[in-house]
Length: 287
Length: 235
Ligand SMILES: Nc1ncnc2c1ncn2[C@@H]1O[C@H](COP(=O)(O)OP(=O)(O)OP(=O)(O)O)[C@@H](O)[C@H]1O
Ligand SMILES: [Mg+2]
Image (cartoon, rainbow over all chains, first blue to last red):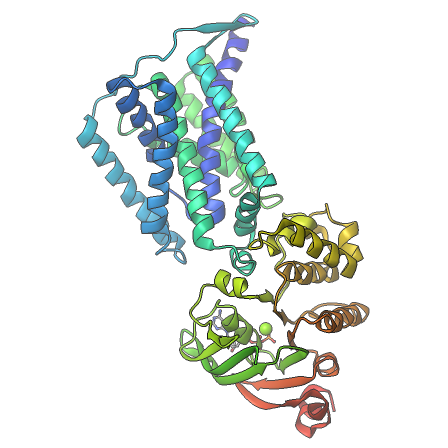
C-alpha cells in the first residue's frame, strides 16, 4: 500500500513535466502544422541552461529556470523565422528541417559541455511527507511550476485576444488571416510558447535527471506517444494523456522494469489508436 | 471609385483562373459578380484580399495599390471578406468568432457597439452566443460569418456565395440582410451562383465566364439581357 501511494506521487511528478513537453509540441503542431522533431533537444537545451547558469556559474536556480524558458523560447522564434516560415506550405520540409536542427543543437552542446552527463546539484534538500509518501521539494517544485504554467497558458488561450487568435489560427489559418490575424505573428507566438515550455521542463528537471546532450531522444518518443494518445491537436488531450502515460509508465517501471514500461507505453498507444484512431480527444475538440 | 481592379491575371500553377479582369466598386450599393462553376468568382475575391498573388494588373483601394499586401494589411485598410463555405472557427463560441473579426480594432467601446449592432442584426446569434460555432446550422453559420466580417467595421464587404446550400427561406433571409447592410452604408461585392437573387439585389453586375468579364452593366439591364436570361436565369 505504501509503495502504491509512493509510486502515485512519483507518477504525478513525471506527469507534470511530460505535460509541459507534450502541450508545447501540440501547440506548435496545431498552429503551424509542423511536427517539431527537435522538441526533445529543446528540452535538452533548457536543461543545459541550468547546467551552465546554475551548476557552473552559480546563479540562483530560479533565475536559471526562467532563463531556460526565455532562451529556449527565443530559439523557437529563430526556428520559426529561419525554417518553418520559409517552409510554411511544406509540412514534410519543416519536419526534415527540424531533424537537421536537432543534430545541430546536439553538436553545439557537445562542443560546449562535452558528451558526459552534466552534474547539477539539487537546489534544495527539503522533502515533505504526504500520508507516508516522500516528495522531495525538488520534485514538488516541478509539479507546482507545471500546474502554474499550464493554468497561465489556459487563461491566455481562453481569455486573451492573442490566445483567441492562436486558437482561430489552429482551426483555420486562412480564415484567421481574413480577420486581420497575422500568420507570422501567431506562428512566432506558438513557437515561443511551445519551445519555451519544452525548455522550462528541461530546466526544472535538470537537477533530477543528470542531463546529457542525447537526452532528447527518449523525450521526443515519449512526447509523440502522449500526443497520439491524447489526439494530435488537442491541448487538453495532451495533458490528460501525459497523466495517463506517466502513471502507467511509472507503475510498470516500479513493479516490473523500465523496458517493460516502454513496451506497455507503446501498447497503450496502439490500443488507443485501434479503439479511437483520432486519439482520446482528437478531432472532437481542438485547441 | 472605392475599389478598382485593373486587368488582373491570376494563375494556379498552369491554369489561368483570371485572364485580364477589370471591375470597379463604387462607394455605395451592391455590385454582383455572377457566373458558372469555375468561372473565377472566388478567385476574384481572393485576389482582392491578398490570398492569391497577381501575375499581372493591379488592385486599388482608395486610390492606393493593395495588391502585394499581406491579407491582414488589407483587412486593416477596411476590406472584409466572407469566404466561400463560411469558414467560421468551429471550436470557438459564437461570441469568440465575432471577436476575432474585431482583431485589429483597439477601441473597446466601439467594438462593444459593433457587437451590439451585430446582435441586433442577427438575434439568433445573440441567443446562441455561448454555443460552439460547429453546432450551428448552415444558415446560422452564414450569419455568423457575415457578423464576424461586420465586426471589423469594414468599408467594403466581400461576400462569396452566401446563399450556398441554404433553404429558400434562408436565402430570402440572407438577401434581406445583404440589402440591409448596404442600406446602412457599407458597399457590398456579392458573388453568387444564384443569379436571380443577385440581380434583384444589386445595382451593377459583372458576368464572369472562364476567367474573363463576358458582360457587365446595370443589374436591371442584365436581367433583360437575352444571353443572361438563357444562361443564368433559366430562360
Ligand atoms: N487552389 C486551386 N488550384 C488549382 N486550380 C484552382 C484552384 N482554385 C481554383 N482553381 C481553378 O480556377 C478556376 C476558377 O475557380 P474559382 O474557384 O475562382 O471559380 P468560381 O467561379 O468561384 O466557381 P464556383 O462557383 O464553383 O465557386 C477554376 O477553373 C478552378 O478549377
Ligand atoms: Mg467560388
